[in-house]
Length: 144
Image (tube, rainbow, N blue to C red):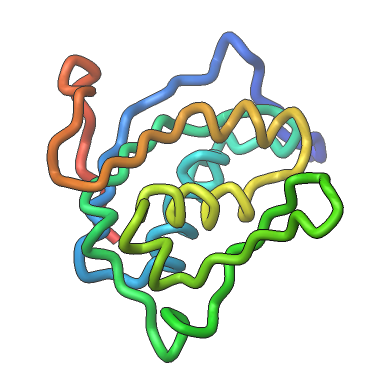
């Protein structure tokens, strides 16, 4: 009986391109699906210490839904590193100004917080509308 764990090699990793349509779906549901694809957890060759994931294109971020009272209660915070430099933005303002940034931040928070996560987030493309510039990569539609 062979009790060795499979570990993918860099030469064996195959990357595909997937399109996720976010229109009418909750932000968190789209973000978890994208994070799963970026990490490669949908593949049988998943290896935790390697970037085995695929490239992800997310379309129609302006049509994503936030359930409950999150539009008014959820806050996006960042600090300028100066005294009194805390900036707060509600989800309603964020969705009006830049919905692609809200989607990007949601996905980034679900990835590892190290160099591996930074490598994974580079494979993400987020678009506000339904047009994208990655037709040459022949992306497949991912249904969820």
